Structure formats: C-alpha cells, structure tokens
Amino acid sequence: MSEQSTDLRETVRRRYAAAAVQVTEGGTACCGPQAVEVDENFGSTLYAADERDTLPAEAVAASLGCGNPTAVAELRDGERVLDLGSGGGIDVLLSARRVGLTGKAYGLDMTDEMLQLALANAEKAGATNVEFLKGTIEAIPLPSNSIDVVISNCVINLSTDKPAVFAETFRVLKPGGRIGVSDVVADDTLPPEQRAERGDYVGCIAGALSFAEYRQGLEAAGFTDVEITPTHSVADAMHSAIVRATKPRIADASLSMMGSTQTEAEASSGCGCQN
Image (cartoon, rainbow, N blue to C red; front, side, top):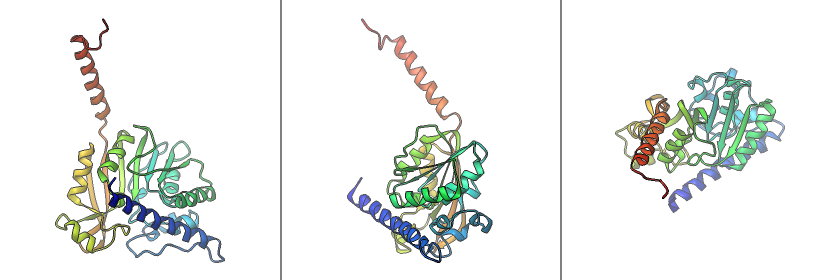
C-alpha cells in the first residue's frame, strides 16, 4: 500500500473513531446519544421510522450511510450476511432480524471504537445471531464460499483499493451468492479531479467510482447481473445508488473442472510420478 493510501485509510479511521466516541459519550448524558452530524443525503433518516424504532438509539445515531442496503438485499431466513464497514451495527442488526435465528449476520470494521459500539448495540438489542469482526474490507477475515449475501452502506467508496474489495467480496460469497450495496457513484462524464472538487475522501465523495468504473470493477472480479440504480443526488453529477450483482453458480464448478482436467493431463504425461 502506498504512503498516500495509508494516510487516507488512517484519516478515514480517525473520522469514524471520532463519530463512535461522539455517540458513546452522548449516550451517557441525560438526553441520550448525540447523532453524528450529516446532511439529509446521509444517515439514519434514509431508514423507515418503524425500522429505526426497533433498534438501540446508539445504533441509529451512528448511522453514516447513503442508503438502506437491507431494504434491497432481499434477505431470507437462514442466510449468512456480511456487512462491509459495519460501523455502529445498524445494518447488521436489521439483517439479523431478517435472516432469523437460523441465519447469521457478520459485521466487519477496522475501527476499534465502532466495534465496541456495535457490540454494545447488539447486546442492547438482544441479538444472538450476530458477530463483529475486526479487519479491512480489502482482506476479509472469513473463509471462501461462506457467505450468502454481502451488503455495505457507503463504505466501498472509502477504500483506496477497490479491486481488492471486489475480489474479496467475490471470494467469500458462495456460488449463487449476491451483493446489495449502497454507495456513492459519479456520472461517467465526471473525471476524478472534479469528483474531488465536490467533497473530500472521508465524506464519501472524492473516492467514488463512476457508473462504468463500478460495473467494470465488479465484472473484472467475476460478478454477473450487475445493476447500478441511482436513488438520490448527493452532489452535482454524483448519486447515492443501489448496486446489485451475483456470483455465478458455475464459478467454482468451472474452476474445479479446470483443475481436474489439468491433473489428468499431468498424469497422462507422467508429471508428478515418482521414479
């Protein structure tokens, strides 16, 4: 990782650590947790009131996303869900309810303060089918082919290595698994330097991909059925969007067949045989 990428990651980590501390310290005051200040394009107002009312106030106050990925991920009973950049846990807790006790919701975050807040929120919610992991979204600490659905809420744009995020997401998904992601996406006509003029990196603007770049990144990782649907504007020529894609069911089978064919070819040529 370059020095600039390291510096950007640390800037992101500090910003979200401060947000978690703000919510946590506010929760000890007489008036409850203090919500992180965001404009109307980001935050808990993008969730339905009946969803917010079922969650701990601290989880709602810590929401910094640009959408509601759980509303479009079509989660089902018994599924295993992973939230990339889970923050205070709002999407993990909502997912846990949708997949039921036979399913499980994982949250992945690199910030200790957010992980502590998320664990406290899970305890307050009485959620027993959740697990929070420390790590980065470029190196997911879960086995391959172990997750049914990956969600994320305005976090992938914060990564300085998006191809690694897409590759890791593809790796952990089971064949036939899918993604339902909320993220900020730029018009294809808007170059990176003009995206940076509209907002900073930690504000989820400067690091955003264009529609075409997002599609190309997912397809390069192996995803199919890519859909990118804008939902509302967050800046001039920049949008919050819902991103859906699927890991083909035949992906692993094809790789397995290729490996088997190679082994047979090697055997017929005498490769690997002992004298």
